[in-house]
Image (cartoon, rainbow, N blue to C red; front, side, top):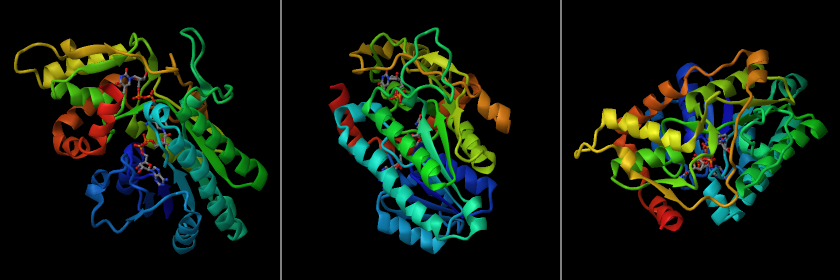
Amino acid sequence: MILVTGGAGFIGANFVLDWCMTHSEPVLNLDKLTYAGNLQNLASLQGNARHVFVRGDFGDFNLISRLLAEYRPRAVVNFAAESHVDRSIHGPEDFIQTNIVGTFRLLEAVRAYWNGRDDADKSAFRFLHVSTDEVYGSLTPTEPAFTETNRYEPNSPYSASKAASDHIARAYHHTYGLPVLSTNCSNNYGPYHFPEKLIPLVIHNALAGKALPIYGDGRQIRDWLYVKDHCGAIREVLAHGRVGETYNVGGWNEKPNIEVVQTLCDILDRLRPRADGVSYRTQITFVKDRPGHDRRYAIDASKLERELGWRPAETFETGIEKTVRWYLENSDWVAGVTSGAYRDWVSKQYE
Ligand code: NAD
Ligand code: TYD
């Protein structure tokens, strides 16, 4: 089987759901269920014997060692993290503890387990570390997209903590020979995206008749990738990636935030028009910029295409339409997550 950490979060849950649809190999899913982890994301796997869920901390060395000894996975895919830049600005401590210390402790437990295996199992084993394009810092409008050899220049506590975790994973390969693979992906969107991030927040606020907050001038650029395409890339790297290598994953879809929000408004105007016939665009509101806001991210994913033949299946237009439809059809899921801790966050960030 494989061990997935953070498999109740946005990307991890999509990965586990897709894995269980396409593979007969079981998944051990370890998640702490922080505010971002949600078992509702995995509801369709209830009763599926190939999915084993354990609530726990990936930084708990004893727990991870016990699970590794009991389930003897052939691979670990590490999604678990604190992932929201704005939260990292308000409170960096959790990001340091989870993303840096947690990843380190997970690697320690995995290293001890891996050392105890026979030579064939050792060479077949994989540790895939899931990371972000944000570690490379911010691009000017004319600079080429990030390649795997770009310098690390993280600017937020989130990206700095992810950068540190990437370095630790790399060192475990270089120093101990642990078969590590790393992926650095651009901004994801799609089903089960927690509505603190731009795309689900805008869909949710639009339908609730609330302001659609655009930070600063809204001209910041992100390179958007449909989450199922990210999951496909991870499966490809896990199966065929060269050990010790990093692969950039991106959608070839650079968009300024304001255009993303206008597109969402236009789709909603078509699929769920406002009762008063006025466009959702009228709800767009420019608000104070994020401190240290990175201007532009762009991923050059040509290494992944050249070596493993991966390209995204969705364009931004097809992926965003699917995403809006998913949110319209899954209002119960949205209602479930937009309570409690989420409401506290919204009042802290925007009021
Ligand atoms: P998310 O915040 O939706 O999910 C993170 C999950 O990790 C949650 O289920 C949470 O409960 C779990 N978790 C947190 N701390 C934990 C701990 N100590 N032990 C076990 N589980 C813990 O994040 P996401 O958007 O799904 O991102 C997953 C990974 O992909 C992260 O490593 C992130 O840095 C990376 N990434 C995300 C994006 C993006 O656009 N969302 C892009 C590139 C890379
Ligand atoms: P986000 O979804 O938080 O992802 P990241 O910061 O990891 O790229 O934000 C995407 C972009 O949208 C980013 O440039 C910040 C911007 N943004 C807004 O303009 N308003 C918002 O309310 C949020 C949450 C984000």
